[in-house]
Length: 146
Image (tube, rainbow, N blue to C red):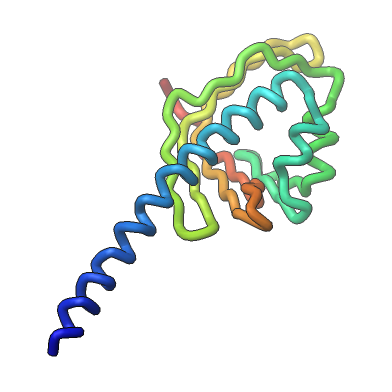
């Protein structure tokens, strides 16, 4: 009977320790989101590539999907220039070795001489593999109206 209270205490502590670990992971994923967007803006494709899983896939609002290689090629297009990338709203939820990021994305620039200004909602999925967080999937949805 004396061991029962100890077991209850241990069971109560496990979720607290798990939640305590989620905060540093959420902060790390948030930092990676901003680093990824800056690498995209600056066309630092080597850095960009290292943050994407080999099986990465992205879906855009128009229904087009790209693999890692396709997305890197798309991002390297010399006919476009990205002037602004920002994520004014970003929420990170960690579930073990997986993080789900939802937010608002704003990008402004020029493509083939024409200005553009995108406002989107997005979901990014990150997975911790071998101690390193990698983005495994991204989805851009209905345009956000500021």
